[in-house]
Amino acid sequence: MDYTDRSTASGYYEEGLRLSHDDELKARLLLASAKCAGGEGGEGSWFYGQYEWKKRWGEEPKSNKFEGKFYKELKKLSHTKYYKTVVSKCKYFEYYVN
Image 1 (cartoon, one colour):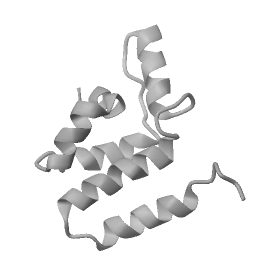
Image 2 (tube, rainbow, N blue to C red; image 1 turned 120 degrees about the vertical axis):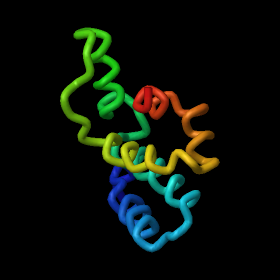
Image 3 (spheres, rainbow, N blue to C red; image 1 turned 90 degrees about the vertical axis):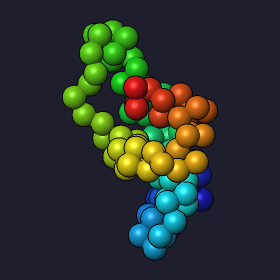
Image 4 (cartoon, one colour; image 1 turned 180 degrees about the horizontal axis):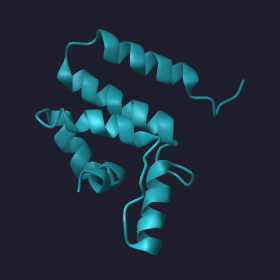
């Protein structure tokens, strides 16, 4: 079994997003999807690379191929309680929205 393969979890999150009508649940699923896509913000993830790029070059990178697509959707749910929690507790997301 490959413990680094996140495709099964990612598939379940996407299915939940497709079926859910609850914005709070969608917000939770979007954050979980972002963590799957980017390896939870560790080295090699989009945000780690973006931070290093910005620190070195003083500007944002041109693309965001991992967490960015999920964080973009999560920003649309800014009215939810979970969104407010994520902004206050997740530095990767806080960096993205600011």
